[in-house]
Length: 157
Image (cartoon, rainbow, N blue to C red; front, side, top):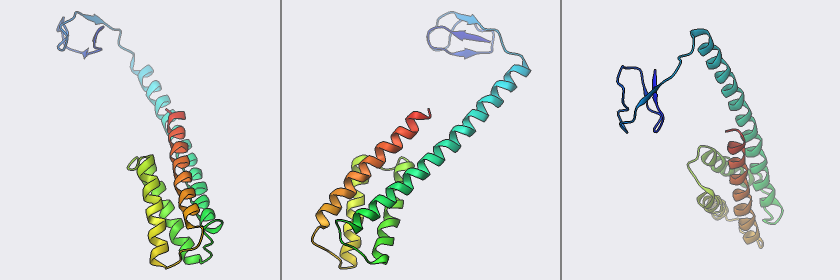
């Protein structure tokens, strides 16, 4: 196999120059079959472990985020109806799922979380005195959740 030193083009044919940059290709020793399979198995095992670790960490982060959103609805929002709290918790899980799937960014996730919380309160006619503090808390905890998810994925690259 031949590899270009400039653009890393790999070529298994007997062409002396690179197709992309027209540089001279260098010969590279090919690995034996046993070595290649062992490396692939190790890489697959590491990838599986990394996937399990990422899923565990994002699951924990999602649980803490949903619990925080519900707690902020109880504390400053003065909302004690279990149905409203359950719907707000489900909306937090929806936002968490969209953030983990990389569909929403920080700003849009925070805005959507506050909008869903306000829509639930409007639908159930449950506005209280400190709803503004609750909405601010929902936006802040959503941004912290997005940063936490980014840290989880950056840590496991």
